[in-house]
Amino acid sequence: MPKAEISSKNQTNALTPNGSEAEVRSYDGSPDSKYTVVARRYRPRDFSELVGQQTVVQALTTAIQTNRVGHAYLFTGARGVGKTSSARIFAKALNASADGSGKFDPNSDIAQAIDSGEDMDVLEIDGASNRGIDEIRQLRASVSARPSRSPYKIYIIDEVHMLTVQAFNALLKTLEEPPPHVKFIFCTTDPEKVPITVLSRCQRFDFSPVKTDQILERLQFICKNEGATAEPEALQLLARRAAGSMRDSQSLLEQILSFADSKITTATVHMMLGTADESRLTDVANALIDRNSAQVLSLLHQAVEDGVDAGQLGVQILGYLRDMMTIGVGASAELLRTANPARADELAADAKRWGTMTLLSAIQILDESLVKMRHSTQSRTLLEVALVQICHLQDLQGLADLIRGLQAGKSPPVVPPPATAPTEKKKDEPVLVSEPTAPTASATVAIASRSAIASSSADTLVSREPLLAPKVEVDSDDLNAELNSVSEILPNTPTETAEILSPLDYWEKALIEVDGMVSDYASMVVKIDCSKVALPKTEDMVSQWTAFFPQGADLAMQHCNDSSNRKSIESALQAIVNQPIQLVLQMSNLPPKATSAIPKPVAPVVNQPTLVRKYSEHPLVKSLIKTLDGDIVRVDVKL
Image (cartoon, rainbow, N blue to C red; front, side, top):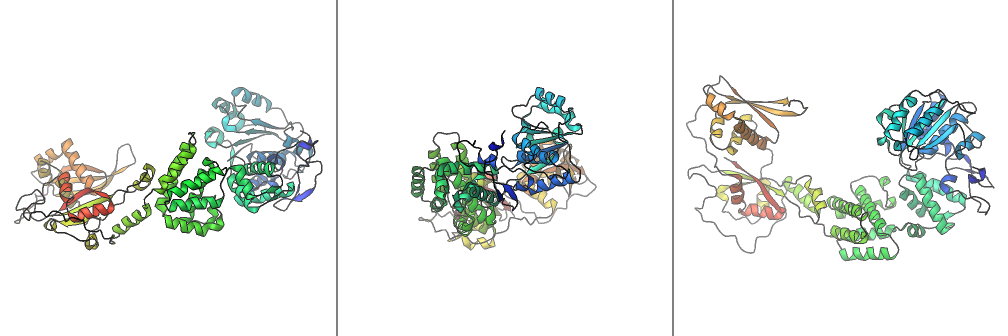
């Protein structure tokens, strides 16, 4: 390639952003000169011009200076971060350095030949179009030939992950033990597709995305050399839009230069890219927070009328809400990617006003809608539906705060009494099905809150961690009492942590849920030992409960040791202790349990559906269900 394609006729020297002198490769605009795009004209030609990859630069230069250059390198990273440029610079440092120290003249014949792709000793191969085994066989046949004028013969394979499995296998032996004069440099954006056998033979360098301020500095440098003036906010938009890719930012800049000539404004950038300015995003966010659906649709209509693409607007709103969430949880303003960091305080106030839970639900709804929009011709309609759906979200943060307060024992808002007084029950009406002489029992009612959310996506967010209200203990003697406020009894409710500590007590409590003779026989157990054991052929641990029967209880142990009976006891235990149980039954020399002169109170034999149905009519329980919009999940009977 002639030199005119990579530089202008009138070349001068200027300072690069890092302060070193570099050739200004500007385009003079004459009809005779061939135009080269900005991304190629300002491609870094030595390590001093490489932006944002100081770690890689230091490692490669140190390897050359200490004579520790490997035979195979793998450069990975996102698009436009400098992988191929670094491979070329590294090849020039190896072949164009006169003293072998890695320092070279970018204007030397070897360096310019490598830049133009004409050097016979540095071969650039496109892995996507040369991916078969035949091409790799040709490469293997050519590696034995020595370089013509340089110390090394260097193969640069771009997008190496596109090679076939057979091609990789054919390359393995040559890659592991190449001739001393051969070096391999692989570049890829998808290292996960490269076989591990290839990865283990290479020195891997991960290229990080270029920081936004470094991209901005480079764009300012290019604009100055191109003779263009640009508003700082306009270049900031381009730098943030590039998302860490230097090449993307330069391509966007060239697109703007072609559209706006030498004057780049913020309005021009938004018009060319089909995006909305930040004030419009702020208005949409405020309308969402205020739950004003009509205003949201009006703002969306006005944006589309002004030339904003609906898909781009949805992406921008999602990025804006992401920044609001970032600031709302206390992160630094440096993490903002869409909003201006100078507005961090306003974002924090909006995030607090909306609530983290509601904001998370809105982000998920919008993200799912953007996925659908990519495969639909009605992208604007889908965006409108998503925004209206967000406006109709309930105050999920307020609901989460209410449940958290209930769990902490705080009083909820007072529930007003119903318009009609509940029907009084007869004084002699029994509450639980039990013997008339059975002692008084109390029940602990656990109520789980269910959030009435306007979308399935928001429901998924909340339901990942069920929010449980405090368990309310209701005495059966007080079931006929009318309560004016739920807050009168909440401070005295027991905690969810059970006070039973003995394994034998847990055993007896579990037997209440076991029916028939199994419960009678199992109640003869006199001792229980608990330990942790490993399950066979796995690394999981399980609690092993060893129950000891007394002397003379052989029949009882045999009955309980039946497969179905033992599983019923294990299931009841697991429901009590909330962990896997492995039950082992053994005989012992211990005497049977001593019978007490005072008979123990017998728990009422009532199944869960009956208990739930009975206690759901209690005024206190009904008030809690209405307050929390919940359901009864369990009723525990205590003597």
